[in-house]
Length: 473
Image (cartoon, rainbow, N blue to C red; front, side, top):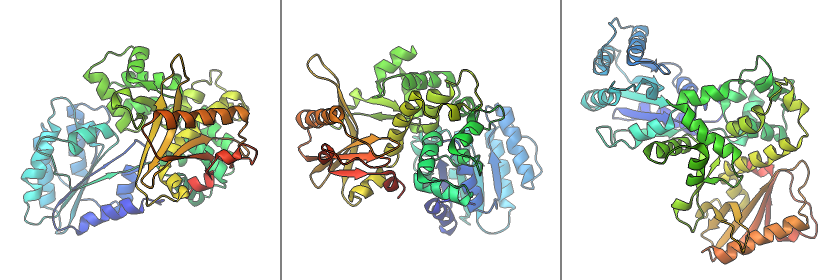
């Protein structure tokens, strides 16, 4: 059963209709459902399918590849090189029945071991053989969770594979609406606030949602997912980062800094100082990889140079891990149920809700009625000085119709109340933006909340309010 993904399924199936042989890369965050999508779309009917071995040596990879060839009906010895392995694959394809031959290679980045020359062999297979076949009948689909590897080795390759991909599909996490549909399809009785809270923890990762159980409250489900001795996701954090990155500890150092750092984010220099990692190509690659994989986001004010960019932890599950799971020092199996009304729980909710809003920009634009208006979506900040406080606005929507929406995002269990202190804080932000930014558009204050905004004497500051129902559209 596939929920959503209609566009991606249509694009995959269209590969079978093309006159030329096709080479498609499917990539996205681990656990987002790439493998399931491909297998379900093609009804598990492949001329050949193979999955790389996590942290396997070259020998392990080649042995596993031979085993996949055997499963496909071919008798062969273990190849010594990738060139030889792809020669065996050619023979398998050549002996296959007439018609389109779908070749599915999953977790391709795992197969790229030192000195294995996987890319050279793949290039030779595709450029020198697959595209040269008179039948033009090859549909090669490669897949990987190491998004940064896919980007560098395939999407931005400067060698023989440059420009050779005929299609690329980035599979993104589910939206709130898709998670709601997933819950309904799984017969989980949930209101939208329940779906929102689970989304703030699990993100739109179908694999995580698949473990939710009927008849349990949100708190009970979270306890059984993360805090019981037999919980399915108890060790997910270590598995997630160790599988994606060859040297995960340096990546985790950066993530830890951002989880402990300022809510507003940290600069590159601040991360280096806090993590004790040295500047250079390795550090740059770490930051790029984390951004490509969707764990962090880089943002700069719309009117400042990228060199002044800040970084924030954006992955829902990772944020939950550091703010909640790791703090469960006493191994309480009912930790989430027992701390549901605690101060730190509310702090986590505030941060997590902001991240969810930033993951639903199209829905916010639709609620503002500007889906068809050209926009520049960004953040804006100025650092504090001796004379003024620092200001940060996480979501700024600059519009081609000469308006700019300044969006404030607040989680609350009832309609949000703008009191005197918060009204003054909002006004400082608006004044600072109008004075210090290079934006001459008319500014509108937009409140994005769970339950709307209480109508009091400060309500008229707002030009538009958006609620979670809008985020579910």
